[in-house]
Amino acid sequence: MAYIQCKSGGAETPTLLWENPSPNSDFAPQTISINLTDYEWILISIKNQKVSPQYVTTCAVPKITDDQVIGGPSGQTGSNYAYSRIIKMNNNGITFQISRSNYAGASGNTTVIPIKIYGLKKALI
Image (cartoon, rainbow, N blue to C red; front, side, top):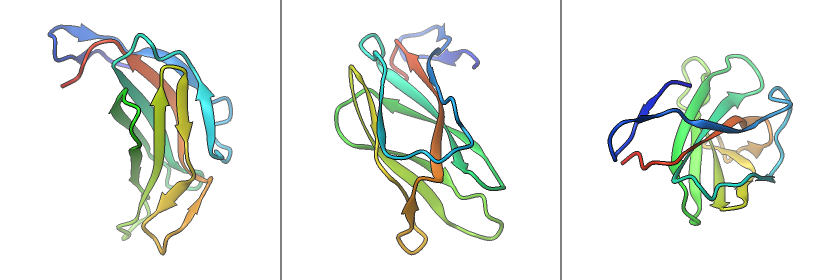
């Protein structure tokens, strides 16, 4: 991961905190236990879906305890569908809820699959 320009000036290399051991498998709702105490922002790289076409999106989210949404486009040609997951963070980790789509209310475990989680100690904005 490249350097990222931070609000307080200077650049910071994100710290890799977690890597999915099975990035091509379903990702059921779960809590990933990682120490987030020293980080202000969390970067979550997600795979849009298990099937082709696959895209990786990195979502930058502030470390707050409110529900937040991460997601991205489906990647299907000619579609305007998007996939998302609600996450909740605290200093002990991140809880991922079931994945959802704007396609007829579809939900499941085959989209918005986290593949890597990084921490940033400085604020982005």
